[in-house]
Length: 271
Image (cartoon, rainbow, N blue to C red; front, side, top):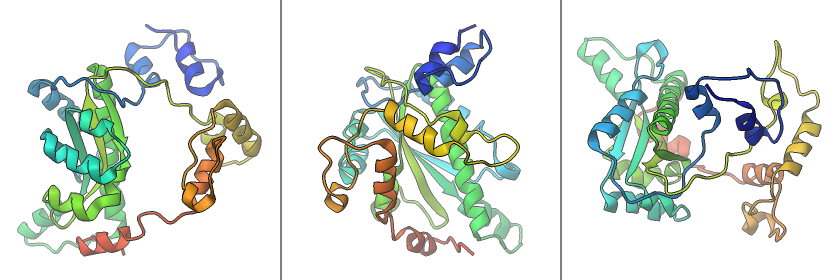
């Protein structure tokens, strides 16, 4: 059993609630989750990788539809292609494995057609269900990797290059990548990522914004200033930006404007 207090304090900067005196190691590992951006060159043994992927498939799935697929990349040249397209994440090349988690409605569409029925759910809800299935599998993979001593880092930027990633992975119509995940043995661990106060994220009985502005100001004060996002649009900030300022900077600039058109071209009706 483990004392959760230091883990919670590391995540939130203080103890926002009184936890149990001791918790199981599996729960402690989740509270201590950290992103990994530095990897050893060692390969992941095939039996271990297969077991981690089995954990991914152990995630919950909407109506047992299992509308996800995972493309496993171990070829260094193919991983390097994606890393070069992204251009700002050199650790992708260092990881021995890159997983691409995909929402997949192709498989069940084909199952329906083979059963002699018309697939009547090429709609936004199906896209959402498949995306959630994929995201849950990625979360389970992260937990499994941590338990095995491996490190991970999610890479949403694969969606910035759908026109290249899709053909590279031979993704058929009805399949799109939601995120990548680097996987490997950590050469060092990052500090725990600071998270918003529970008072901002956790709502009791009903949604409330009471006290949010004050809590966000305190959160900004706790975190170090970060590299400014979109300085070419919003101007430089040599002193760095607060978390809320960077959120506002990023969300005020249109990103992935062609995403909807790409999805429609690949068989997602989005109705």
